[in-house]
Image (spheres, one colour):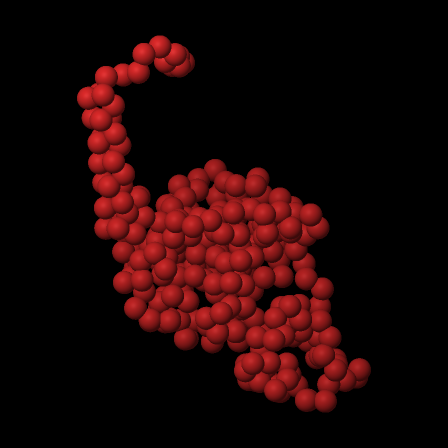
Length: 273
């Protein structure tokens, strides 16, 4: 413990030297921040970061999109590196790394998924993200993106959705069972259009996300169509019209649309999620 100096003040020359030293350190910090965009910005390139994220996905995610959280909890060093990059770099802090909309979208999808995965590990792999946990995990828990603190809710709704690509809802994964299937490779700017198209078709090909009952003349679709109706209707006159774009067998337009309940159980392979 350093005791307070209750006696005489330090000599003027000493105080001036200390002040100059503090100013010099501040200027050095500002210069470093301006040169890198963040004090500890990783030296990885975007392709290197995407490769690292792909290695995490390939190691811990199976073909059904389930995550081996038990193994990940024991060895998350690479996931930590993925998240550390997101903390220092984003399209706002370092726009030169993201030359177009596809580059920004691919980054934010990967970042959201990686942060959600890391958040599950950090919170001890809860059984479910429903109830009170939904509020604490999506609204209260903060993550760092490009040097700024943000919740997953705000990252999705204030950053990603305004980019105007409704198919992100088939790519963003909060690690719950009802989320779209988590791919085993990263999204990339060059392949993004094909990846989003594939993700959408894969999602709608699963009966848990789109199921037609011809007897009752109704179609049951995933809850995300209820959550984000506005986004889909910006692209098609009705939800059925939108779904039919990605299905080989069209749904009659007069069928009634109903929504499945959302399963907030964490998609943990070890628990059979």
